[in-house]
Length: 534
Image (tube, rainbow, N blue to C red; front, side, top):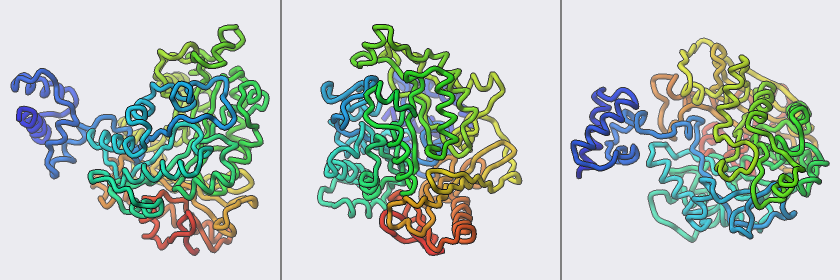
């Protein structure tokens, strides 16, 4: 009862205007905790439970923790597969593995890994727990991006892949209800199209040699929309040195196959992997300029030395030395100056506790250090993440100029085909509101649905997440979703495909839970895609 009285007191103070910022909130918590004789401060999630439906929006801004988790427009749900051996063996830098009962390349200490271990790698329980966590701290969860972590899932038996994905989707479908064990994959997917928590994107992590036509077809069947390739370097010599088990040619082939199948393509890269700063800078320059590569997304994972790896033994002998924090900051800041505007830098550091790192980057805030280094030299990154409106407006006080919003276009060649990056941008403050990736496939495209058809590989409108069915607010600077930008980008892509490329068909790679959106524009199922006539 005291908890409820305290929570209602704080909610009332927010609505009455007596709580104006986080400091006011902290003081009011302390006052009411003392008044009701509580020996602790209540969590924000506990206070939110007592908010009435008509109060929720008013108090959410004060009580929602970690708002960046949905500022990009989706709630990220990570689920980790059971430990299994890599098909080729083990890279010399790689921690984890079945012998220590942890998925390959993980330490067991990352938040997602700890959650997976806690629930015995049960996908249903992992997803349910994550949904409950996000809901408790005030995040909308009706648009979810599912990240399938834990090593090379496409190398495992397809039966396990289907089981894992089906259970993740079932958890979304059942959220708040009960568990139903009798549905097929297709039935679960169909239900998720209109579920409360919809899977609007699904990411697979894999190796380049396990992202060929067969694996890509399986990913599409399961609902995949994005693939993250463990590329690490663009050197066959380094691949041999680290026992990687594939070649640069495999990277080129995988990128082309995935891109022509309309999957978004991310690269995980490891600066400092038997390379100096000059060599790494040249490698990233080639990555962004050579049409054999040109990924849509990049993760910077500076090489770390960890106990239990072969790289640790080389380090002890003085035969290997990773980048220091200072070297990594300097290099990544230099690389970010040349990142094209159609690339999103997803991460700049592995989610590994620094106390497990024997040598390498020993600061946990590498992205912030890189941003500070760039500001010191007056540099700005042009990548998608550094310009997206939700994240940027959460960090900076910006006055929007609605008259400065423009539709922009960038054309480039990639993997034997043509790419067009369409975007709505507020040009005065360099803010990215939304974008679309349009592709003219290469002649090597293997999917029958992509013969004589253009393809949309991504459509995304940024800003704080607006729930499905909810209208955007009156203030455009607060919520940018559901304002028609997605529809305008879609129509412009259709016009280009029809008038400039001469296509009569167009395909969209749609997340399972986003299919209803495309139906509004006359699209219908075309294999794993949504398709339309031009």
